Structure formats: C-alpha cells, structure tokens
Length: 341
Image (cartoon, rainbow, N blue to C red):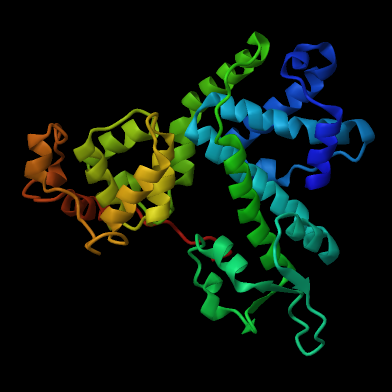
C-alpha cells in the first residue's frame, strides 16, 4: 500500500545500516519470506501476520528488504516464485477483509472500480471497468474468466468479492515482478551471504519446484528419454541448444501444456530472456506469426543433433517423440479420482 511505502521512506532504509544488530530481525524475516516462498507457496499464502506493533514494523520493513534480496539473486525462478507467493498471500488475506478494504486496495492500483448498490443485483459487490478486468484476467485459462461469461453493463464488469480478490492477486504478482526485476549494484558482505544462501537453496530445489509446477495433465513418466534429457537440463537451470529448446517447447505444447505454462517453465534457465522466450514459445504455439503450430522434430533429426542418444523399446519404429510418448502412456497407471472429484 502507498501508506506503507511512505512510512518506509519517512523512516529511511540505508543499506549499510542493515548490518547493525537492530536490523537483524528485519533481515531474518525478509530471508524467511523468500525461503518459504521457494519451498512452499501454499504454506506462505496461508501464513498470518502477528498483530503486534513490533511485528507490524518488521512485516512492513521486511518486504522491501526481501525484494532487494530477491533482485540481488538475479535468478528468474526465485523472482517468479517469490512474486507468486506474495500475491497468493495477499489474495488469502483479502478474502477475510470487508468490501471497503478491497476497494481501498484496488484504488491503490488505480483501478476504475466502485461498489454496487443495485438491490436487483444482490450477487454482485463490485463494478469494474472492463479494460482493468481484461488486463488482469487475460492470463487465466479457466473459461469462467472470459469476458463473455460475465455481466457487462455500460462498460463495467460486475464481480463478487472473491473474484476481485483473485484479480487483485494478479495485480500484486505483476507489481512485485516489476519490483524484483532490477539490478542491485552491490550489497554489504553479510547481506550478500544471505543472497548466496538463497541461490544455493534455489539450485537444490529447482527440479522439485519445476515438477510441482508442471500441470497434472502432462504425464512426465511417459516422456521419451530424449525429451526428458532436455527437460531435466532446463529444470536444473542449465541452457539447452536451440534445437533442444525447440524440441522441448513443441513437445510440451503438443502434450497439453499451454504457452504460458511453457514460458513459466523456461524462467529457470540461466540465460532466460523474457521478451525473446515469450515470442519464441508463442511462435511455436502458433499464436504469433504464420499461425502454424509446430510439432517436435522427427527422431532422425534429433539423432543427427545428438539429442537422441539412448532410445527406449517404445522408440522402435517411431518417427517422432510424440509416438513414443503415446506408447509409454499405455503403461502408466491412471490416477484414481479423489473423493472430491
């Protein structure tokens, strides 16, 4: 909130002073925010702030310090994971707030929104100008978020409190992503040591995090060895060849991942370039350029480029990795539906 930012500016935060004993609790909480976000987004989202004056101060000041630590890691996975966790937490906290508080937070982001007072529309609480709705709902894949599935009157989209909380979550995520996407020139040694520890934690957990974020509809156990090799390399944050990236991207898109899912997956690569990666993924997906959706290179091409080095029994006679994937799927047990299904 603007008031919190103004409070931090009034007190002032000198980077060199952060090494003093007074600021240790602030640094500890900032590092804890980033660590928890990396290890468990859901746990972080459900964490509640303590309602004590000293704890409030620590919570307020630890946020810009955490942003600084994240930016200093220069790690795209840490940046995206932290932004997501803070956004999820904000959304959870907003669900417990009165509608007037949601309106106040929305206005903090300069939303053109108002409370609905029409008794003939009791289900709706907010009316939001449709450009703001589209800006934040565009990345949602659920058909319920399509504009045609919402009540639209005179350019305003009518929404419930829960829907506004979800849209604000997206606004917060993008806001924090903008904050952490900055260059930190230098930090005192003790603080830099914390940054190094966060990088090491991300390196240790990178593959586990990528597996957690992989959509459930994609069956990783059925990936052919050639694709699994490229996938593991990218998941570990190591760069892959151009043909390798093309093969992996086109394969993932072909087996059910969205362009946005694939884009997020590539964030972990050390040489990640957001603009270029998004363009290439969308081009392969057919949403840019000629409109052609590409399929993975055939097996002969992958052998020529040294990507196919250990074919499996299912690869026999296959001309494309997708054939091998479909064959392996037959031997993967189907997930049993849960009681909530």
